[in-house]
Length: 638
Image 1: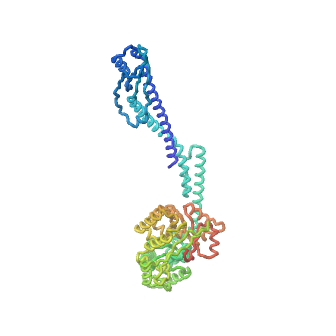
Image 2: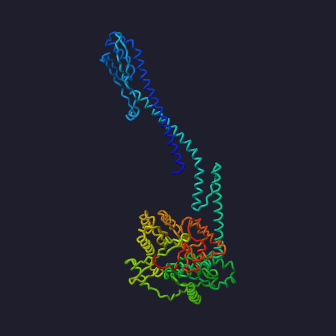
Image 3: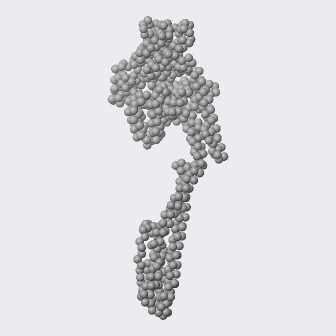
């Protein structure tokens, strides 16, 4: 309940008690006055007709006359006269009118009207006792009407008081609510400045201080964002095309091959424009830039699920297509080859050609080997005289055949050939390892284990990627739902899962059933490249995850202005960055690393660094004041 409601409700309660006590006191006073009036009236009437009772002989007619005089008061119930021997000589009872008053009111009031006893003497000097019984029945009605009037008066007074008090209280509480709003926004890492300061000096000072804090944090946030954005543009951007450059490409390729070892698979693709220097000499810089702009637009529109598109040389562009099926990507590349060549023909009339080369990469390969294969294939493509200068590299890797991979996947889903592997995520402040990353490998009938990169293409071909994620979640829930100590588990979720309403509904049901289990918490991880392209689906997914008090992580993150916007909308709790990216920000005073930490903290998240498990890298990363570390080389159960 809000402060306004508490004060308002308490004040109305006090008013109700005060009015009730006042009206009860007035009713009791009115009741006592009625009782006293009745007694006095009866005693006065008896005394008034005392002469009548002094007759030596009291006839029936005289007694009736005396009674008639008394019964003129409708509150008289009965009159009884006894002689000096206490023998009744007269008795008369009056019928009383029925008053339409609720029984509860009669029971609550209870007039105290005892019979009035008085004595007199007749002419024979004999004592007569007169007993008059009273009944206040007819006085309940005016008293009840008085009560109703008091209630109406109390209701009117309360209503008027409520209006005036609410207006006054609102003027007092509104500044407090505004200050509370400022505090909440600061707590949620938002920069809110109160548009109006309170009038009272103490509250005005507090609000002004909070505004000053918000302004300073906002300025620092903007300054640090600008610092990292400027650094990002200088180090990772190509000025002419707006694409990422070779540095960014190399950083991500290293990350794919080493830091995300269990999930690493996919393709590297180079696209080269021949005679690029000659084009500048013959056609001029402006015409080349115009053609290059159209060329890049086609590269960006190619239906390749790329994680990186970069310009690695003035005449060469490169894709990283993580977790993609090689054969499917080949067909897509060939379909768009003619469009790329057409751009060059339209501007340069066959004085420049497009050459394309691609190669698969696998977990644990060296960057040198991958790039060497692609470079060799690119040279082969440039030397071709055919209409399509395209070459695909043979990795020379002895891998499972397609039939063997299909059999492996079928066995896993039908015979539960899944092997759950956990990696500790170390909390750099506490040193605890109650945060784990879940990875699942497949096992064949002989018990041989295969990583995701070795069967991922079949998952895509059979449309089982979302089902695979579901199985990872099921395996984790089965194993850890009965833990008696808290644990948080990170699980990678694919684009296919978050876009599938069926799987998202299933997850909602599972999380709802786990609602009472505060020990097991999920951190569902989405790749940065997926998050940017699927923001609408991810926003719905994020809302679901947060609804059940679990968390979201963005994996493979690099910071720029555009990403800040979508991070604020999606609200991940963790940002996973590669060791290479963090180390690229490192300099003597660690300004850029501190800026990254501050920005991520103000976005309401924590940093997890994925690193290569070597002693020298661990020592270096501990100096960077990041929140969590996760080894890319760790293997085994935990």
